[in-house]
Amino acid sequence: MTTGWPVFTEDELRRYDGQHGQPAYIAYDGKVYDVSRAPDWKGGMHKGLHYSGLDLTRSLRKAPHDASVFQRVPQVGILKPEGIPSPQPRLSPVNQAKVKRR
Ligand code: HEM
Image (cartoon, rainbow, N blue to C red):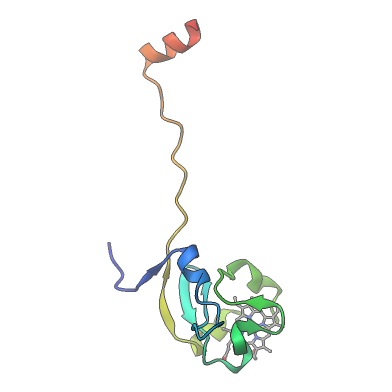
């Protein structure tokens, strides 16, 4: 399924840190936003505390505002979900017996 949005990995997102002429992007709740034009994100930094180029989902809890601030900045993409680790492959009964015998 495709959403039509560009997909950013966390590595790709890191490049958009608002430094050296790069735009400043941040991720929140799976979405990537452009905060380059936000006065509170000048130089890619927010309130001397938060850097752009990162997933800040967990940091919002400590902010004095809620997620409604994201209505004021444009979305530019989505964050690629972290791979879900696959469970250990299950052994067939025959192979389970072999492992026990070792
Ligand atoms: C923890 C310390 C933080 C402080 C002190 C802080 C403070 C502020 C203030 C004062 C504003 C402008 C007024 C307002 O919109 O309410 C603002 C806007 C904003 N903040 Fe934060 N914030 C913090 C954390 C965060 C975090 C963790 C995120 C991202 C997850 C974030 C994202 C934003 C955005 C996107 C805006 C809107 C910018 C605009 O409208 O131009 N902030 N913040």
